[in-house]
Amino acid sequence: MLIGTSGRTVATAQGLLAILLWSTTFAVSRSLAEQVGVLTAGSAMLVGGGVLGCLYVALVERRPAALFRLPRAYLLGCGVLFVAYMVCLFPAIGLAASRQQTLEVGIINYLWPGLTLLFSIPILRTRVRRPFFAGIAMAAAGAALAPLRWGEYSAAALAENLRANPLPYGLALVGAVVWALYSTLSRRWASAAESGAVPLFTLAAGLVLAALRPVFDEPGAWTWRAGAELAFMAVCPVMLAYALWDRAVRKGNLTLVAAASYLAPLLSTVLSALYLGVDLGWNLWLACGLLVGGAALAQWSVVEPATSG
Image (tube, rainbow, N blue to C red):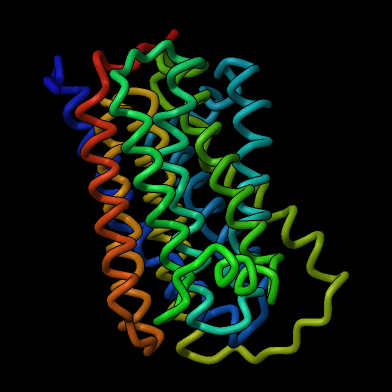
């Protein structure tokens, strides 16, 4: 699929970089949540990243007022979706019963790329060929395969595994739907805008998690490792990745970046396994292969790039 302008090419490349940075989210967030608590970790990351992003807009780009001149539908609608996604994502990571389940939750969360392509059909009037839906089904099969253990390849085994601790899985699934809607509606409502409002959205999400923090008892101790992980998360996956992705979905090739984001489960799973010390089974490699294959088929089946509507 050809990309028409250099600006679109740059925006698309920014989306690919965001995917790479996001791939570290589950590993580092899980480690930090184990040390200081789920809501403490999530709120600290988001507030830190939001403050850094707002300072960058105000002091470097010198356009703070421009944030409030964005389309109202984008500010309110996409803002609510962004906050809702964060309220799903970080508790899903922290509430997973084990580090192994954290990887499984991550695979379910990564259903959002296929859903982004799917939602672009009614929202952005993207045209697709029939094999598109086979690609989406292939990716969904990969997500369903990932939580299964050796010799447990049945619907009953999947249901039993999900039933044991349903909340993280449910939050990850809801988050996937919400983020797909955010990505698609950002393109529809703010594709003509020069910049997005991710710093404001990030700060708002952090404040919401911080408001929920006193409700739950989260004993934990801050160490040098926790501080280093917090600094990394606030700067890279939170401040940079979300800002890069916001520009990509508004200005870049949405079909390409959404399809390429199918690589995120593979990157995220491998990085998480290495960082958290979790052994990978061959079924997880097969799951990632189905996700990537589904992405390729879905992208091939798109007749024309999504428009801003």
